[in-house]
Figure 1 (cartoon, helix red, strand yellow):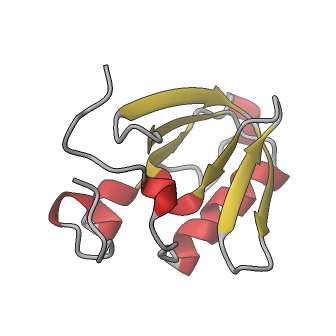
Figure 2: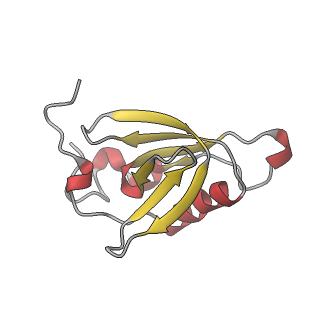
Length: 117
């Protein structure tokens, strides 16, 4: 059931995310690391998806997106967390969770001037 007190996050202006976070997401894409993603959907609800990231790209409007192998796309400011699930052959120093809730203070809307709630 959609939350009645939340707006569509895609209707708001894009807020760029930390470049280090984008670098890690691009790493997961290029190394084909399976990820669990938590994000805010168009109804303002927290959702999850799993899979492989096919691409990370920027539109001519300077909005950043990730595209999953199955074709689903997410604007990067919808992300709450991206958690890599590498197999043992992919283990290296960069394989760690990116917790955007902590990095971007989503709860406090610090980096979301239009708010999420």
